[in-house]
Length: 239
Ligand code: SAH
Image 1 (tube, protein in one colour):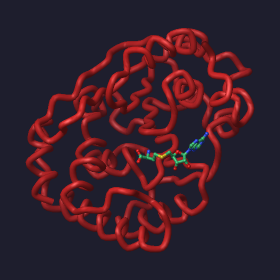
Image 2 (cartoon, rainbow, N blue to C red):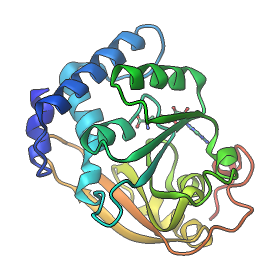
Image 3 (tube, helix red, strand yellow):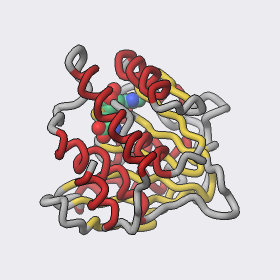
């Protein structure tokens, strides 16, 4: 995990031996299960360290648990093989983490992985954001809502902001030319009770492409009709 260790220093993060061992276990399980089911296209040791693990940890450049809320509630929507949620949990074991994905085989892997990492307090949910966001234990409950590589921004805010409590944040990983995508999401952000707080550019030597974190503050309650029924946020994004 040398590449990850060095990369993390660029985020002012010094990973200890225990954390590096957890990332190593994560890598081994991911590669093992990936032979039987499609969890990730990236399998090379160095690339997983950078493109999955370090990329997940860039969240630290805009968010950390704070002293007045030391055990924040965090949900990762469309977590796939556990990113960015699990890397964040390795660094901040105190967070209360829920991993959610609509694909059963992915959540089967996650339930196995959390045992291997001895992270019994991670909760794994198989479900679609459009449906789970209407259940009261999940609606407007989270301090932080994460999503990476799940949907274009206008769709993504409908899948994430309903989970976020007022004064919480949505942080979405984005790549490339995102100007138009962000412009296209402005209406949805307002309708759903958000406010675009920051477009944080990630400048680490490990990444050759342009990467950003889109940070949205939740400033008002999301109207009850959102998210709309499954598939609608993708088919007809709020524009
Ligand atoms: N976040 C991971 C996976 C991205 S792939 C990563 O960055 O590598 C997108 C994932 O989102 C898939 O695993 C898919 O099953 C899930 N997904 C897509 N739409 C969803 C929805 N509406 N609700 C829940 N999960 C969804």
